[in-house]
Amino acid sequence: KLDKKWWHDAVIYQIYPRSFMDANNDGIGDLAGIISKLDYLKQLGINVIWLSPVFKSPMDDNGYDISDYQDIASEFGTLAEMDALIVAAAKRDIKIIMDLVVNHTSDEHPWFIESKKSLDNPYRDYYVWRKPQPDGSEPNNFHSYFGGSGWELDTNTGEYYFHQFSKKQPDLNWDNPQVQEEVHNMMNWWLDRGIGGFRMDVIDLIGKEVDKQIMTNGPRLHPLLQQMNKATFGSRDVLTVGESWSATPNIAKLYSDPAREELSMVFQFEHITITFDPYEGKWKPRAFDLVEFKKVISKWQTELADCGWNSLFWNNHDLPRVVSKYGCPDQYRVESAKMLATALHFLKGTPYIYQGEEIGMTNVKFDNIEDYQDIETLNLYEERIASGVSHESMMEGIYKNGRDNARTPMQWNNTFNAGFSTGKPWIKLNPNYVEINVESALSEPTSIFHYYQKLIKLRKQHAVIVYGEFQPLFEEHAQVFAYLRKLDNDTVVVINNFSAQVITVSLPNSLQGITGDCLINNYGPRVQLLEQLVLAPYESFATLIN
Ligand SMILES: O=C(CO[C@H]1O[C@H](CO)[C@@H](O)[C@H](O)[C@H]1O)[C@@H](O)[C@H](O)[C@H](O)CO
Ligand SMILES: [Ca+2]
Image (cartoon, rainbow, N blue to C red; front, side, top):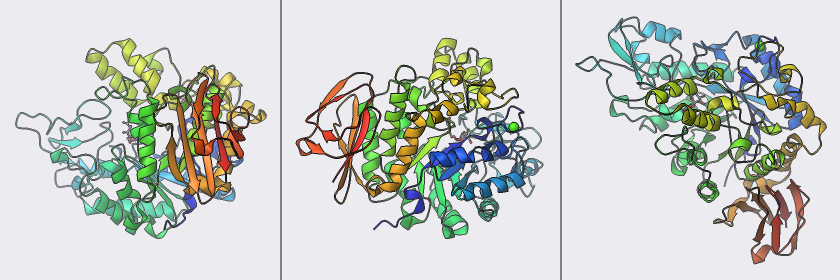
């Protein structure tokens, strides 16, 4: 029997601090800006804020390169302001979960500065050092996610250090018990400050065995997480979500089966990677195949039905915006954004909303590569152009899947800089802020914002949405994503037209002619489930029958 957890019916809102709200007008979002928007988030109805990193950092990867885990980056504010945010959020029944980035640190972290001083420095073994090959070359041919080799030579000690991301993000050596203890102490330090849990960055990488080129799901991964659980959050009622691009349903159960005392849930990315080219990855986008997508969703819904727990998300600070990727960002922007929200929020698991998703923000197309700020985009542009890829093809990849699509400033209103800042924003705005912004969304009762607000309310009101069994419908249909959720006498019928065409579907006999309570819809209410359903472009509704 599943023990009920507070986060089973919670809805989480992700904030990318650099782009959310700039209170001191230096062009960079900050903690004071977030505090000034807490009432807006309360109005939306979310229960938890996942805060992307705000720690001291040289910002080589916008904070995912930390130089002090127990202090706040000056551009974001101070520790006192962080404490004030935790208190102000708690006043509104909103918890704050922090981003735990411990697969690697910044190369400006004191641990690394010490580590590279000499071969026998007490911090040497905090990182992964290896001797060069006899010809002086890298220890092996591991390629960094951000381009180039994953090994950087330190001329001073004559050894290479390992980095899966940028060379300013050296990997920590999790085989070292001192490293484990340092991180556990840091985590308890934050938990004692009243945070609601952790989002764990690339957590599937910490069990790596570099010499064997085993990076993900190393044999020590789960023992490390069980130790971490016992030493830190295990005794506290907090939420932990691990980012794991390599997770399969079986692996996700290892992480999130409560009996194993590891994490609450993981972010799995299979519904994302099916849109990437198997060889060239996200830089060569594949056409979206709804049937393939539905198979992935059904698999995760079904396999974690009685063990573990799913996270539900369309986008985040590394991914393109949902309405541009899976919907229609122009003619049917509102209808498709609402459809995509329905399709996700009626699934079983904990939903995540990425800042701006609730007002239907779209991808951006900057004219020049120089307008881009993301280290992954800029490094891979350089590397792929050097390898012969055309500028046009690479820009196409960046327009579709580049990370800066998610990082343009939040659009608060149609005034100067969309009300984000009166200073020069660190990254250009999406020019469509004139029509797509919070102020107009709040003033429009049928806006995407109010639709998300209602979805969040419904999850609190109906246990069938939280705990109901998932049953797919029309699995082979190329345009319609539909399913049932069943709990005791309640059944919710969820129908989504993923296309701009008018689509007619015939409901299964068992559902024909039944009258129910239409919980939500993005066109007119669908009370009676007719034999034939004629769905308008991107039409979406959920009807409760009991
Ligand atoms: O693998 C990660 C992990 O992302 C996490 O780890 C990265 C390193 O900390 C950091 O850059 C990301 O922001 C953080 O979410 C992604 O960056 C991935 O490479 C790619 O962008 C997916 O398309
Ligand atoms: Ca600022």
